[in-house]
Image 1 (cartoon, rainbow, N blue to C red):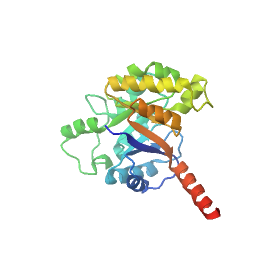
Image 2: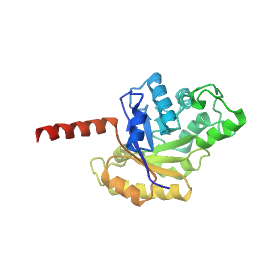
Image 3: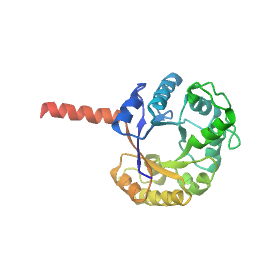
Image 4: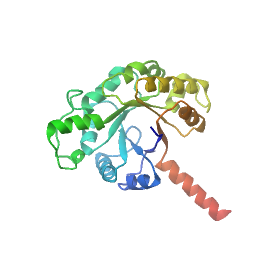
Length: 243
């Protein structure tokens, strides 16, 4: 499996952003509903555009409550990411509400964006949706790292993304851009995911950690955001003019 390229959509509610990302060659993006200020209307439009131009769109949740999960899934999200996943119970709540029976207890409403308003035979669709919906744990605490095996063994969990920023804070190595604690964690978590045939990924712009994640055979790389790309391109443009 090739490495999958992604980025975070942090603040800009531009409904055609998925088209640009697709043209750039990205495989996926994550809408940040944890730190970002998107409303349901913003997310709904972005998810529909992503669905139509065939780029995977995931939503990072604020928490594992039913209210947001069922709305984002019915809007057409390809999957969900739970930040601060500390144990199996945390992520099991997401699979419960994001997956249909028999895996979970997702509410059934099919004349919605997730079927492109053309519901197929229900039983076939529920099985297909469960196969296609991805649920990821974001591992960014020592407790999450310690419980990674149990987290990934939950039925319906497809993999994890490592979050080095908060993890560095929790491990006491914040400010060290090449911390051995983070490197060891990348290797450990990727090895467990590979053994279980689960997806492993990382959310970072740190080149040291990105290179280590590649060496550890991680599969999904979420690097930067639309804000960092805009700032970097703008800085480059000004420099081009002034030099």
